[in-house]
Length: 483
Image 1 (cartoon, rainbow, N blue to C red):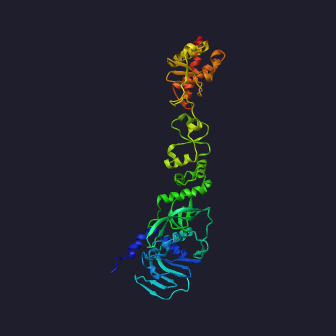
Image 2 (cartoon, one colour):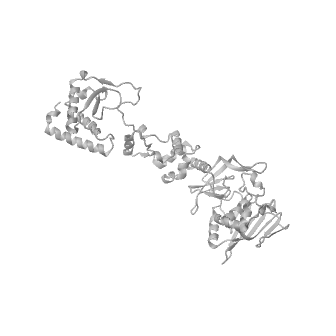
Image 3 (cartoon, rainbow, N blue to C red):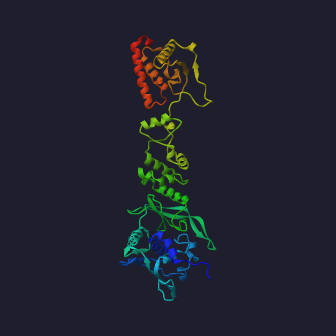
């Protein structure tokens, strides 16, 4: 006795979830894998009955190489050795037969008839050329409508005229076509399937109304991706046994390749799609494509959020920049973005001036000792101390320094540093004429007692509040301002 017995009804139940259109896909792909020039498909619903008549005819001169393959599961297949052929497990016709009430396969090598009672008979009478598959298949109205709709998604190969119920399946002009090294399935000398990588052609097609973007294998949709485009790979796609999924790494590779060729066609919304974000993180994502995506998604005025310089982030937002948060992309995508120099941190584009270098090896700042202060310096520092106590209740510590750092003055925690190199001697010596500048500088610095960020609402409120206090104090005690 044989080791295995296949329960046709049980297999049919398992196949129901695939939808009846897979029956036509299997038969059509088998015809396309031959030397046929014409494939004619007819599907006729039987009125009032849950059945349909199916016929697939091709004109391959050789026909079936071995008729026994029509009913022998996992028989060795010539397709296994050719990565440019669609099938690999020699399951197609057997899965189709599981859903049929009765069927007949006629080819150049003879005819096999499958009866409703489960028997089969074979005869030597066949066709002069090509093959004919005829069957009665279980199919209700809804399944028939779905099948007639889904079959229009096929992309027929060049040179093979394919019609469905008298209507030609139209070949589609690709939006992009390119060559790529991609994983595929081949068989070794003993027929064992294994994975390899080889160069193949990839065609990218528009998704038509009513369709979902999918990965195609030589014109046959195999995996729905939900991306923007159909991607038709011209060799075996490494799908699982159910032919409904691919490895995540394979999908990501395809996404990166598509992005490299079509990034410029994406609008702002499309540039933020999941598949695009996934593609950016692939090792083969092109720097030009990454830059284009960021241009379209965030605009050319963009920066990465800089946690070390929060004020720079706010300053750029005020200038109309888009500041991108770190969580927008994963680490691999950020690595590619950085390598492409596609965006810079806020702190690089608009650095907040830092009073002193954070480098421990930086030259020491020259502090001018009080005994070398001019009368003007003493007067300005004295005014600053008086006003700090009057308006803030702060006992101010003040220094005059000489440094090339980009600040005129800085304040923090009750300490005020005045940079003589930036302010100049006239700021102090001509203090009476420049009283307005002096008060402006002190209000600006004293406001940092309440808020460090120049662009925050709290800082603006502190400026206003201190300005009011200075005015009231000037009216009540004008002698304090007599320099």
